Amino acid sequence: MRVLIYDAKKYDRETLQAANEANEVRHELVFVESLLNAQTAPLADGFRAVSIFVNDDASAPVLERLARGGVRLMALRSTGFNHVDLDAAARCGVTVMRVANYSPYAVAEFAAALLLAVNRKVHRAYNRTREGNFLLDGLQGHDIHGKTVGIIGTGRIGAVFARIMSGFGVALLGYDLAPNPECVQLGMRYASLDELLAQSDIISLHTPLLPSTYHMINAEALAKMKRGAILINTSRGALIDTEALVEALKSGHVGAVGLDVYEEEEGLFFRDRSNQIITDDVFARLMTFPNVLVTGHQAFFTHEALAQIAATTLRNLTDFEAGHANENILQPR
Ligand code: NAD
Image (cartoon, rainbow, N blue to C red):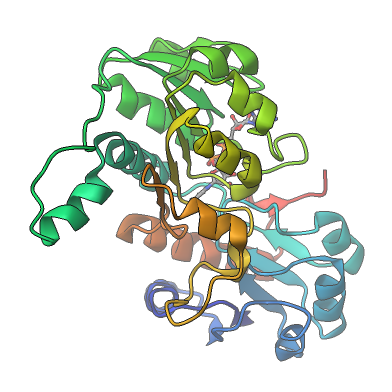
């Protein structure tokens, strides 16, 4: 099948081509660097399938334009699908498939990396020692041992994060629609969101972005958090109301924040913007806090995860072409 791969970076080309060559059934992969949007949708005319990543636009008008050009499959190279209008896709006859399951370790381990960095100020120490400043003032952190870690969303990634945290010797609190037996076995106690917010010294977000989770960390939720608590988000930016977070940081209520995702990241992440002026004032303000560490959506970015994303994406293409349903097909809710 001919597939147009949008938003293709060097690493996407390499891993997808390697996985394609390793397969019996080969696909014709055509790579473009452009993000999918209303302007770039016509590039897919004549293709039966397209593949996109997390910041492409898969809204109704874009899906309608793709379908008019002959596209019947959209293969997401991600787990999250909050950027895809599944109702519109169904209406247009476009099947949407994702990578439901790839290394949860990649993301959970990165959440731990952000936590350790902001707690022990590793990001500041890195710059300081390079400038020849070996003072420790301002670099003091806390032992994680003995603290309460609240995990919001205890699915695949949340459960691995819980396991990593249990190695530090912490009390685990969980909030989810349904308890995960793996987490219960680790000693996690499930609580209401309010209780988790009030009791946790460290909070890590691992729910998908849904209408029910949009801005779940808003001004009220932030106010309920312990003064000085650490907040980590490796899931989706819009789980947090960033303007409210900025206010909570300004007042000193939030202790430290590690973010791999940002609600307006589409205009920023995965590009070199170092020669440009940042026009997003909320993001710019966020970057001024010494106790905030922002990374550009890199939690997934390990060799293992990329190889799994490529292999599953190709399997999705092959299954679709052969008319086989698999677990990665997304249905409208
Ligand atoms: P998962 O489906 O295994 O787990 C999600 C959990 O959230 C489930 O247990 C579910 O019950 C729970 N949940 C859903 N709605 C909820 C609600 N309203 N309140 C409380 N809990 C709720 O998903 P996963 O594989 O663990 O991935 C989680 C998220 O991580 C993805 O949706 C994606 O947005 C994000 N992610 C980020 C990166 C990255 O590179 N930063 C990479 C992969 C995934």
